[in-house]
Image (cartoon, rainbow, N blue to C red; front, side):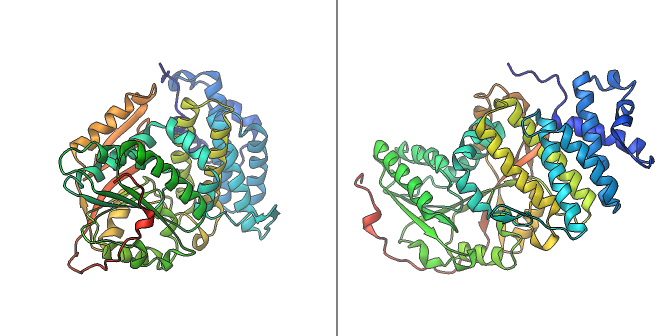
Length: 450
């Protein structure tokens, strides 16, 4: 059984934040003073000596961010040097969070004072393309996802929402905007193969990406093999484009009688920052006349123009993320460390990048609702079955009791120790009168199961 009596990583950060507010009138915070900040409060917080040390480290990070916010870069640099000395990417979750946030704050100082260094093949101000990073980290991402309850819950609930809207469809066209390994597709395939009434005549999966056609084809090959074990008629196509604006309706080769379902998992956040891309993508998808579009995104708002607000939002959110990894994976697991380094790049993007150069734009579900409404998208209720599937998944995790499931309007919010992490929502396009273009499918893509 997973112990849950300790303070979570986010709770440590919040306690440190509350204490910092109390002492923020002091002019300078150094290591010698930290030993006194929580004197007499250990019993109040129910904290061990180790947790107090973690709070002191968190307090030092908060002090650094405060100094940066007040343009006191010399003092901030001194505090960050201490953060770097006391934190570690191989330490506990608090130390790892501080390590990556301190690096991001250090880079922000360099930007503020006009210093930009080169590191290897990329400048410190240049992130790898998000999809490129995802493809590169695919094995680590898969391994970590399997160990995170809220990730598995959102995946199964999302696929359940798709399945429920395909009950009578004999020709299913499943469009995946971020297929990665395609593991979630196997859940859909099993459900369709087990459908005795109105059996499926063909499942077509189309994967869309802007990098690595080879990786998508590898996923397709595995899914094709899996479909053979289910005796499920199946075809696969990968659409690779350089820019999302290059995506066109006729690339999907829609056939008469197909029912289209679209699946987007933690992908729109990489499109939203680029002018015109969201409009272009949703315009194309609308013309495909999908029966449902299921969207999963981070349930976080890291878009505040006020630096300290954006810093705190990111700090609490990623603290919960790292906390889940710590409780469910070994400290030295290479997959965990690889994913945490990738999350460190996201932190860097949020904290250090200029507003108009960020590669990620995280919005909470209310923010997405407002954006989708502009494109005529209407939210659909996630059924009781989706929530039931989510609860069943949690039973497979020793730490399942720490994963939270909540409703926000018609959607599902999954979280960790009460902190929202992912939103799962289902949508349809309000205006669907236009006729879509039907292109004869290439029968060479179809396996021999049907």
